[in-house]
Amino acid sequence: MADTEALDWITPLAARGPVPGLARPLRLSYVVPKTADGDLSFSATFEPADGDGGGDGDEADEVELTAVPKVADLLASGASTPNVAWMSGKLKVASGPTGPLLAVLALADSVAAAG
Image (cartoon, rainbow, N blue to C red; front, side):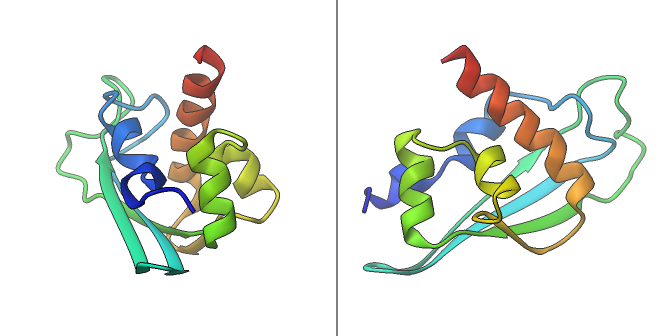
């Protein structure tokens, strides 16, 4: 298993800046249960890009994702992207709306394609 910090793919993604397609902020939590270090949890807030909404005092959407350690390793190594893992049912939405998540997954794919 990759080291704990290497499993965190959402914090660096959120640091890239506003996300096109988000209508309002998104608080995303990512949980990897049952690792050798116990349950791991990462979270970040994604902001909408200018002109995509937000800034109206809207409350943030909240989404929680989960992935087993093996899938977390694939994401950490780049052997899989979050979008592929989600579409194949390996990255699961534990709670929250999927619409805003799709914008973040599209951003993750564009970052992976840019290499």
